Image (cartoon, rainbow, N blue to C red; front, side, top):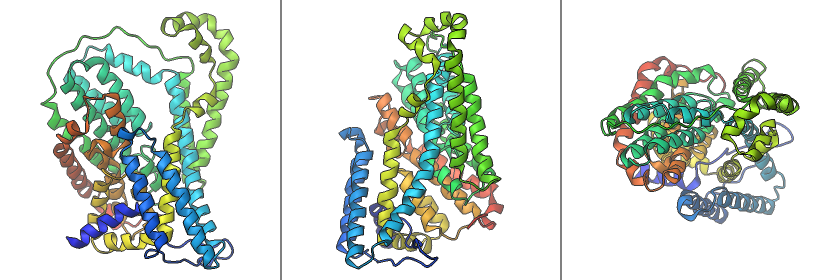
Length: 486
């Protein structure tokens, strides 16, 4: 037990480090690497990252955006590393290491930027608002809406991010049930679990699955082996909570929201962009980011077409638009792609940068070897991967998954899928364990809270355990298969 506690503390403290050895820029020989785990700079870097992450976890109370403390910590950590290496006469080793980290970040950054731009474009075309208005005016009862919003969260999040999906479903929940706190609280928990579970079986559903796919460890089609385990992860707590949802029927709304011109074409182009990214990766052996950037050009040309043809179609559609939009908004129907880029989740993208660089620095100091030995060497792959999911309820799953990827433990395909599953759905155990949960606490402030979620954590934990069991049961053959790319 003492060894487990020490390993967990080390894991939390170092944020789950980065590669121990990187290639030098010259030949193929390994760069000289200093072990600074017992050095003052190492201890100071651990302290900096720990304090920064405490501010990240306290964002709801301090209102300090999570990107700010990790950006500060990342810069200082690498400055300390560079200083120590220069003192030892090593001028380029730290530079090579940080460039490696930046390259990893750049690929994911460009991929996510395109995905966020498409989501913002669909939002501006009122695709999500149209879905929301349909649900609100449907006349469904609370229990039916409980299942519908959870089901939609599960199936939308594999394409859209879980944060956008959760916010959309929460808007529906509040619109129809604001006067019934029990329904709102239970439905928010259900949406958080559904959105996180839905993202676990798709390479596009979560940043963690995206990282695993882009690394080439798990092929695109193999992720869908997690569909049934992910579904079980959502269904088990939903079935338990169902009986606590009020069996009432709210008064339906008469609000009607139409999708704006170009909205359906935007959805189609987003799907084509995903196909392009997958094709680049699977058939051309290029980074998926290349396919996503090509897909961004599809949206650019659509925007150009909508601008050029707006005046010609205004007479036909203007009367419908004026019913639901004020006069100054009608001009936006012409579509401006760069406003969609500007509305990307820049705080999230900058937070991602800070985590990659800060965690990369801590790993370069030598802490990754300690954590890898304690977890995968001492506990075994299954226990370590289950613990990774539990930790993701407290620590953001981005550094958790980065650690596992850069440790690169010798695991079967089934174990890689296991850690992908646990890192994706483990955040549902607590309301602060995922971006979706944190966002909904703000949107349904005072109704969906940390403690209202904690009350149902045993049910969510039962779903977590059931999904792992189903994965072992259904995908037993994958535990004998090594990853396709090592």
